[in-house]
Image 1 (tube, one colour):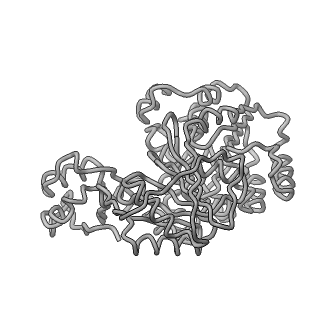
Image 2 (cartoon, rainbow, N blue to C red):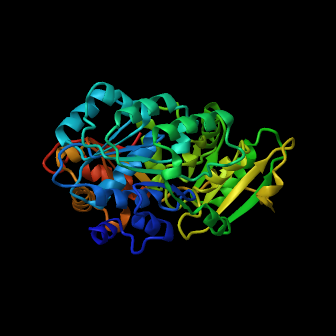
Image 3 (cartoon, rainbow, N blue to C red):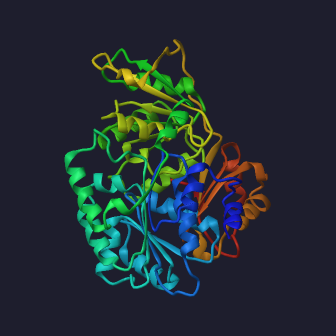
Length: 447
């Protein structure tokens, strides 16, 4: 089954960390590995091997600290095309809709954020009688976000668990780990039976090789307000995909508003946004409909975004750990990347970041236009629509060539498609009023 799964997710060879996780014989495993090293695949492969077709009900619970990470894990499971169904549950949408999905799908795997999992368990929306497998992904992040109460209640209800796997991109014994987080971890440790019984797979030392693939630059801003410097830098980077990290939600929106006013194609992302808006922003950045993604550190971990060329620290990271996780968004797998630290006149970049000076070009700056634009289609999986249907419709009815269609994301009731920006207007005209798979629907530029 493993070879077939790897073929489905288009991975030819597992890396050392993934192989170690797959071969681990212990029923309690901890994986420490850098951001972007493939931990999701590492914990899913041995989990899939443990699941049984002859058992009905939820056999595995996966806890994740964010909605996006829960969705990402669910997406990877679906792409593996195993006989086992999964459901992702998280805040920001109606719990009743999730309950209906759980009831209709009868999933083998449930992935969720601590609060929403606890909500479903309290209401008896799924049973833990056969739930013998537990994964806690980015477990230190769960503690950091203050989920300890919800996690405690969830874990107390998972009393049939025999196999546990915890993952993290952060060393447990980090000197920067806050005292309260250590207390919380001690409580989590007790609930999980004590860490002395865990097989620890520590691949964090391999981060040196990844760090060597990241070029770190210091960009001096002559003004305390660094927006103009950021704009000039983004113009110089052109069509490259860049994530801009800021420290506060209000600053995210202020920065994105300024960049859009200057003509930059950008999206923004933070924990205070409605889930639907967060998902749309992610789709547009992932599929190349915008070049710039402005976010808090929420995007520093758990988001699977390929081909990020640059990480830009608009606000200085709060600590070295945040710096590492932010930079982990680029130079993923064997790729190279760049990290830019914008330093104001009253700020000092830490010496340990070993940044080289970067000099901005002087003169007129041109804003780059992304190749793609995102199209919304008001039909999805529940309407029996799939990617093949969409490609066929856009080629035959919309007049597009296959290379003018980019990433396609088919959701339950709607779909997002990246199409060549220069052909979008004509495609919309060609398909106006037409049915897709014999169904009337809305086809428009995503708002």
